[in-house]
Length: 202
Ligand code: ATP
Image 1 (cartoon, protein in one colour):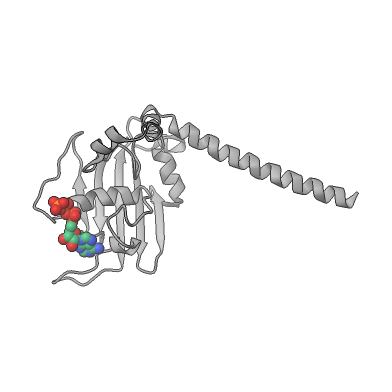
Image 2 (cartoon, rainbow, N blue to C red):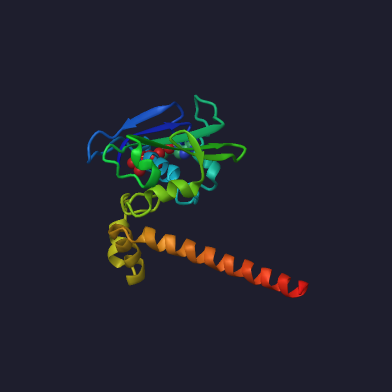
């Protein structure tokens, strides 16, 4: 999977619908201070499920919606869409068959947040599952922000291990194991409840 383009509308300073193409493996976004370079990175993190307003440099999640300028009124809705080329079929599971995969997140001022994969409504977890173990994701190492290299060099061994596990592709199996262990625990609880009820009836 390779990111082909990013579409933003009503997101931070991108009030009009804007398409940013990513034609090569290495691209740079340049521009004067405050022109919106970091907002593009915020948009990528947001659509991949980032839930911390602070990480997106705001006080509340509503701060990602264009809040007006000297010449434009605020808008009520923001959306961001990432379109990936999947001609190599590397997307996981049932998504492998699609040549293109579009993931989208929308937010309205009344707090309504929606996620979509290829126009079908989905859960945040479905989007996270697609990227688990690929190095992509809202907090993954594929986005190297200012000061991050220094933080990695100085990080504690257990934090470094998380990064290495994601790069090696094992983190998705650890996540699946955690989910399965939770399900087993719930099933045990249910079984013990059933046994109690049977005991009472006998
Ligand atoms: P620098 O080079 O200084 O790091 P930058 O190009 O990365 O700057 P950003 O931080 O991406 O710039 O964009 C900052 C601009 O985005 C500011 O002008 C700010 O007013 C605008 N902005 C941020 N959130 C919103 C919002 N919700 N509505 C309207 N404009 C916003």
